[in-house]
Length: 582
Ligand code: FES
Image 1 (tube, rainbow, N blue to C red):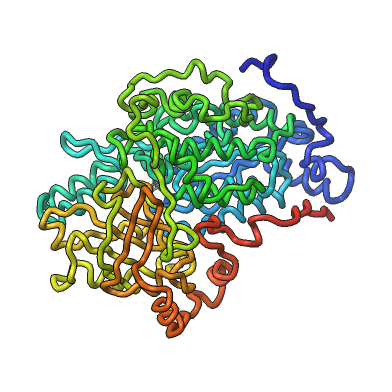
Image 2 (image 1 turned 120 degrees about the vertical axis):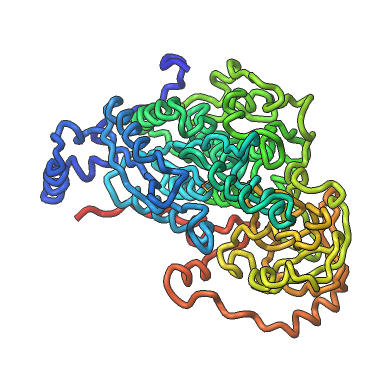
């Protein structure tokens, strides 16, 4: 959109900038703020009366998905400088998905708090949020929503395709696939070692439609990125240019006072959910989007996902539910092309960080490969990329991704094999004496928000080895855990309330019949209410997992999966005042 056609917003004056409180007055404290900025080699003319832009950078040596952020942050700064702003880099906890234990989900709210408080406590007028590896995206956005300063998200971008011999490898998805083949004996250890060398070849987040690609696409759907930003591969030169443009844009957003609360309307969230469904996105997006919406004061719950899922076609042919990878998606036209395919399923009047509606320029978005980005007529599925299940086993809901499951398991009843926790499962699942067949239902307990704790991605329980050797590649698995967005299989997840706090899942015993019917959205246990009550009466609640520190705060304030797993004290409440300056 040209500057002339962008809706006019009242522009701030320099003395209305938030940073003016630090830099503007002629008093003792402001003298300190200015003299200490001068100490870093700046002239007063470079920062006084300029929009101060915090760049929240989640770079770390331990995060391969953000390995390029050292360079990207310089490109963001270039953009901020060129637009007349003053950039300050604020490093924040990285949440490196593969390394951080027990799970990054334990720390999503930590980063959200850190981002919010860093923005509040420093002389900041606006923020560039640099994230991409799974939980970094929702965490940064949640913090920015709560602070409600002008903010723009810069997605890390997906890494390049993986390769092994003539095969293309996808993050996560092909790890699970070839690990199963190794256990089944169809590939050897040398093959496995070669795969290790070729599956991750560049900076950038996982390049399947896992949680990272899902959440950066959702961020674009919400209107929090520049158009097209979510699909650019991290290693592409266009990614550096997008970083600089993002830096330029935030300066204008500050002058326009364009805040998350102006962008994150009910329509924006509806658009983001529609995007997640159309890309066949990760089940994790449900938790994150609900958490964001609650921060923004927008009503959004599991039923909204289920209702939209029934009619939103599955258009992005990307693994794990499809065939291609994010690099192919970019070459095929990227998210903008997919948005265009969605037509009036999106409310394109929703305003984005550009200050213009989502519709702006969308007419020019083109699909260059119609096998990668399908039309509504050639959709991979007409709907039901996610389904919300309820029943006596999940009174507050559970989630399944039907396209990732063997269709024979969409309607199924089988005897439970109940594992008390992850260690019990790991110890027994491959034991030759485990009484299991392909109709059994594997049940994992104590894997939820408080029970694991942190609700790790344990929901894709391994298929028992003896079934793998017989060629079984899918079976019904249920838990209160999450599942990696790169995973697949008939895995029922996010069962709420969780087992650790006495949800019905806690009382499943070996041999109980578990019944699923995806079309009817039902998950139930063929056990009478009376028998369940008897089991509950005999139950001793387990002790909390942590007695001190962050873990203890987490246990005290964490909500359940259907409520977004946010801290109750962060989700909503009276606004926190800006700090006094004395
Ligand atoms: Fe960072 Fe997958 S490990 S996105």
